[in-house]
Length: 458
Image (cartoon, rainbow, N blue to C red; front, side, top):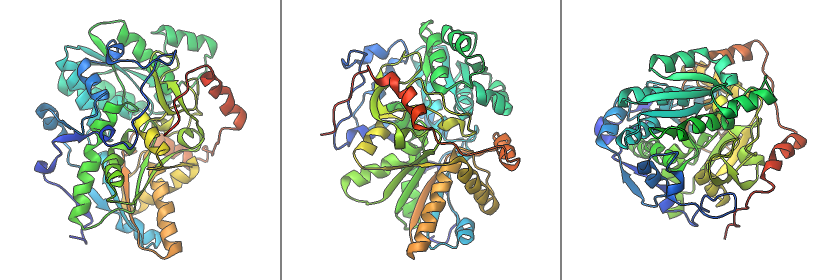
């Protein structure tokens, strides 16, 4: 078995339960609060999410059963294969063994439908007829369009304007699955009209798109909002990735020394890592777990841990997370799915706990890594995924320098077949690295000054 390049589980090996890391945290997370710092209860979220998802959001149960209808749809592509990247290893001349979990085999091409299907299902079961959401690079919007069509509810997607312009095929995917996709900021909401009046040429941001989707959701009792990352229930649904990966690593008799995932809002990173973090908390592994983010949007590596809103209009409760400030407008890098100003509270919390590490990587290094992967393994990665590949290559080179065999496990979060304009820009020499200057950071972080402060970690 150890010589296999592709490790495949049978359909009967698909996890029947999601794993909830909140049950095993060494210290509980600070709660969401209002602007006065008072903890909020589940009822405060009811205009935004259906109560069955809110119950998952606040749950501290370790295992939550996956509904049979959701399992039936997940079986279209799950369990996903785990690959040994032998050609990449040979190219790097490294003693490291590199494994990657291929989440690009889903119909929309990424890990995102793991939670999209679940969210569409719970909304429909609660009587909701229409879901509004946002998307950065288009992967989440595509996943939600796919899920809503199969589950049988309507879908409206606000797509960050720069990605709307850069990635026209993503719009066509959403339309093919029956969703209505508009560029954000738009003229369809008060938030969008205000932003466009202030800056008609804005590239948009996930924070703006979230505000627009929220505004339309709360205006209609049969509409709710759906978020593709950040929230606890989203992290929960993604843990099928790590639960499968643990079984697959056991089949080859290997235990990862380093676990890597790219991080924008935190969902694919959490999906792979949380089941392994549980082992780390229990003392059964000492694996290093690394979240990789863009140097141009350095939430985990340069942002403070603070209470902040998930959207620019501050329609969400204040969440405890590493943040660049809800007014942050990132540069128009091609890794659109990693351009979010905040990080998932659960991911933020385990970084504070010292259970994971965080690294920021420049854009050009990521594209170089993506091409090295495509030239050796064949699959063309999404720009977001390339951040995990770049860190994997760094770790493999480190193993070479130290002369140590090291087992590396990476989440290959999605393919880049709808993101080839980014590769074209790279080939044409139109991309450059960018790190926000201190004054740029300070300007956006000023919006946190008068907000409540989270308690110190005890």
